[in-house]
Length: 196
Image 1 (cartoon, one colour):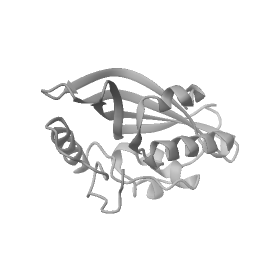
Image 2: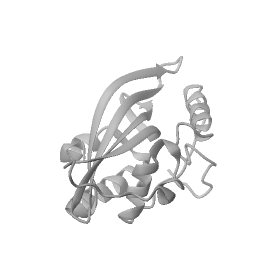
Image 3: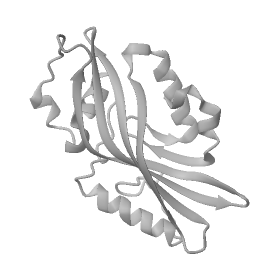
Image 4: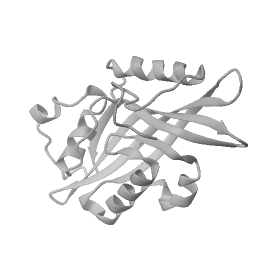
């Protein structure tokens, strides 16, 4: 993940930055430590790569805040019963940025999933995924969510681009660019216990 260049990745974020992915939510440093721990697990976790398709940046009128939206395909390799499977998830990343002093940095980051699929690495070896188990997860990332749960990483359930969370997140972006205050959960109800 992030080519293991954690110092460079960390430099994008302010110390109080909050991240919400499908498998981990919390402070930036908590996210990095969890990612490192996952990488150490090898095939018992998931090997994650990101392919950037395009990006767009919206700025506040006073040029002190921004939202960067990126179209991404996340590829995760999972291994079930010694069978390698790749999950491709088409999604949109959202980086909420702020200028503090002379420095720009990320304050919040989350994503929405549009669709996903599983393909076998070796077409002759296929891991059968029970449809009755998959259908309980959000449509935009039902296979990824199923796989994350299978490796004991319960997925965040409100990151579906086809659900009400989309409008919630776009409302948060509008508030952010207008100078208002936002807080997690970025795609659901505010967390009363969250402290930056």
